[in-house]
Length: 155
Image (cartoon, rainbow, N blue to C red; front, side, top):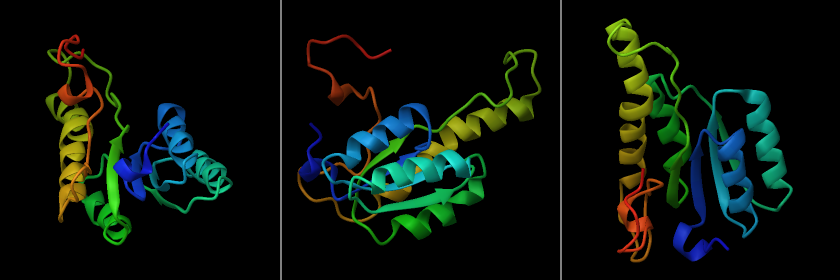
């Protein structure tokens, strides 16, 4: 069971319209956690939002390609008001698909911008402001603190 007192009243799910992101959204909606869903494709985004709303939670959506580094202003506009307790950054892709050594460097840089730079910018946005004790503004899945002290190192 997901504890709303730990996650906070609002969770941002970037890449929250399909697959794993949609699963996160549905699991979070079950205990009554409000959602901010960010995704590129409007159809799946709206479908996931409606399914979560049917569980009685408030859902804000943002149709956005996180590859666009100028997208931060749009993310800020929907995340500044609510108390966001958790960011799940599930967005990412290899939008180029070539080997690092033989590919065009600017296209490889675009993949890095999407999967690393954009994620850092979004995480920084969520970390702004005071954090109440016991709350995490953002948590990366597979983080060291997510495993037992004697458990294996995450892959």
